[in-house]
Length: 213
Image 1 (cartoon, rainbow, N blue to C red):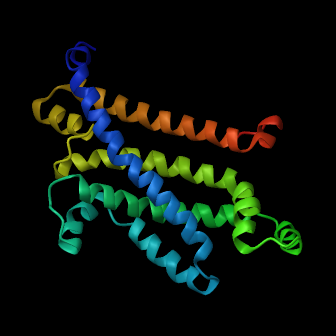
Image 2 (image 1 turned 180 degrees about the vertical axis):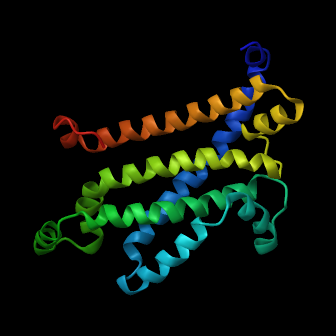
């Protein structure tokens, strides 16, 4: 605890950097995945699933290092980490979004179409609200994995909470390592709790029924 209190401002700065790196991939990746899950035609789903599964299987550090050679960015810095985490978020959230939208009863969509709703209206007013529980569950998984994988970015020069792991091991300071672990855990729990509350707010009928997203 003494190490943490002596370096609290330093840890806070790393935590803010960590947050800035994970927020964009979580938001952008999830939006792209949700839209993609709705616009990808059925005949392209198997191929898309295979590609995303292969991408998700790539070790994060390998992707961080490979991206500069593929897109011409610098080998050192947060750009590669943000892009890679966004790709992982899309790959993970796509499957959750497909499952969430598949849970919408066909009879409900048929009724909405018979009432004169366009495809866009059907998506906004029927499919999206009914898919929220599944989407929130997927977002919670994405946020947890993104927060944890972002720490690996310290290996390629990103000074986030992962720096505490590297520096702690190099200088043999267990308190620094533990501080990094706890900080990452707290951020992950904060995201998870926030998304759970968001899910309850967006699905009041489930909250009244005593069910958890």
